[in-house]
Amino acid sequence: MRISKTLILGAVAAVATAGSANAAVVSLFDFTTGVSSDSTGSVTGSNPLSRWATNTDRKTSTTSATGSGGAITMASASVVQSGGSPMAVLGVYAAQSPNPPYNYYSSADLSGATAIEFNVTAYSGVATTWSLFVFDADGNLSFSQLAVSSAGTKSFSTASMSTIDWSKVIGVELQAESGILPPSPQRTPYNYYGTFSFTFDGMNAVGVVPAPGAIALLGAAGLVGARRRRA
Image 1 (cartoon, rainbow, N blue to C red):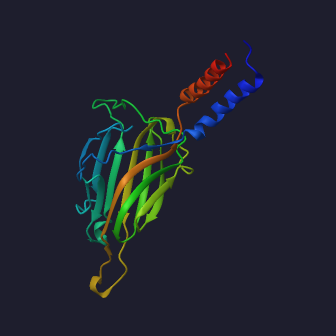
Image 2: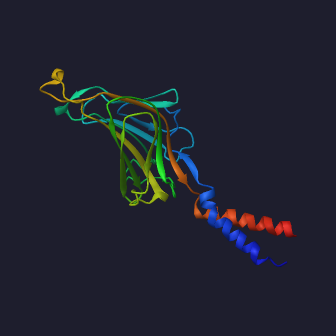
Image 3: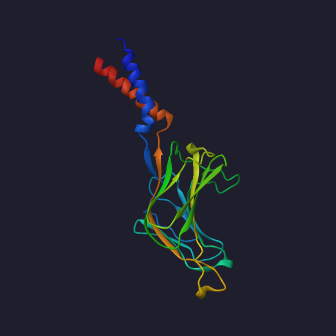
């Protein structure tokens, strides 16, 4: 039985459009997983990256990251400027061999991702600078920054993060750094970094498309289905 040219072109079009039609939002963290400051552990659920880690950078010991109620809260106390700005850090990473050469067991395929987004449900205190770092299995990294001072969806576009291979991501790390309080007589002669606190319950890669093999299967399925309808 002959297959018409129109039918073939239709199947090709299906393959060509499958990527955009099937773009997905991939959760990078399971918020039923509890986290604690300056620690690491396993992410539960079916997340593409299996380890989490937190730390309180610059030795302030005032930044915390805790998991509760399906959300994570990061906060800091006020610190004199000479002590360095508080920085809250949360990252998710692929599992790594404990022995040299410390190879990663797997990576996450986030091909086609257009943004990494955080759903911030509450925010208080001074504005913070958020830096997002993404690492791939070839040792490349890329980063983007946002100024954050309120709740809402915080979106890091991947357009400026083209130096990594999004098909083999091994780490996604958020760093939130405190801003300096404005001068006041009460703080003279010192400047202080202000307090901040924010809570988020979503950490997602947006626009991820199926692997090429999966897209090809979609097209093949459409072609087989059309042949059966003509039989």
